[in-house]
Image (cartoon, rainbow, N blue to C red; front, side):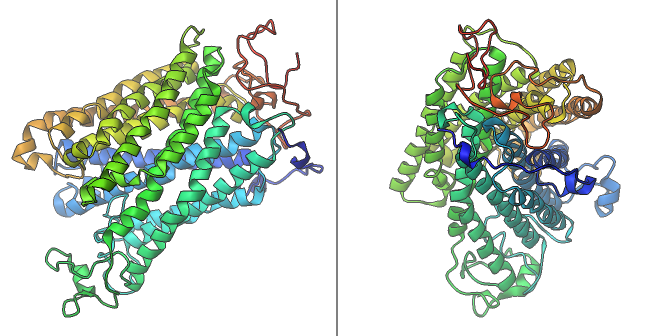
Length: 598
């Protein structure tokens, strides 16, 4: 049942100054928009890194346009191999830790949770503010990691030892990889603060009548993702501290004592004691695979932290714009719980090539394939919602259905990739890149775009331009598939990812036209986002003014003004039903709002 006794009474509101209201704010709506703006800025930055990667892959060692002479005068404007390694490291890091997770859980989680459950704010407003401001040292550290001279961060977004632990020049050196680890730690602190707040708010501050099974699927998804954060994130944080100790204090948690000296860079040689067989001051017996276990124990559930909120948002958008109740509400909830639960026991499928026990490999393989069952439930329920409905093909609906289509492609490839014999062959090929981007970019980012178009009227009180939105969707859909679908062909041919010059290998030379086609589609995809940027900022100031409920939706956030004021709601709330009462026979309209008493 709802818990009206725990909804706090707000005293008379005093007008705050600009800095206190919009910068150091404790209002969940402002904090959500802060996360959104930060995530979108880093989205553009991560996209620029991706464009540099694709230019190098299409035209290896050619002069970089515009910035080549400035950044690489010694090579005639062409990027260096070390810089290429830094590019794909920073691209993965920024897109995952500074874009997808902050946008889905930080931006939409903060903005929507109190509004959709009928609460005046988060349970811990100051902790919420600190959760955003913990991102600032993370941004500083990740910037320093890229600007620090040297060869790092150059271990990929996974930071596998010993590659990530042998790059310190001397004891106490604060090199680029160390800055990277500090950034990861601060992002984790930010996420943990948000997760505590989300679970507490949802459990303790629901409006009267808002039972658990009257909550929108977006709220269920955000709560399950927050629980995943609470259980998995401390493991990665502990691993980050241990790797920091390996780098700064030269301990031996992940660095083995039998490292071959040949092939280490000169900076590493300064710290390596040949006579003793390990780095100066290092303990013995470090295990590189230990880091992989600690990293993937968080980072595989992190995939569902990025996908589950997208699933919830897509469900709400599809039901609203199909004008039909969500098909199988409770199975949708249970399937999200099953996906989260199975997500905790499948991290080893990232390590099939590490030489694990075949029985353990079989366990990870079967449990991974089982995730297809709850995922298929969600897909069929989305299709069941669309079947026989009155679809409104506006921009939010296009992006939500686009998410479903992309998720199907990414999910299907995940099934056969989970088979150990298949993974041994395709491990670290471009099939893995294609699969991951179909789930996270083509999936989660499409849901993010759909969520922005859908809830923009509630955030800013104005409507986004639907024509520009449809143009944005069509180009994004076409060019996204042009980029990532063709990567499956490269992967089947055996092309390894993180290869700076595929043309240098005779075996892969015939694939170069495909690489060039992918890069051209990537450039067009990046440029196409100008339609979103123009639409977003123009509509924020000059868009058509929105009423409280421009979509005629049923869920609770549409009972608040657009945009909501202090305390969110200007009337007392009582919830009588679930959030998907569309096409109800109990009303002449085509929807029954949650607060509407028949």
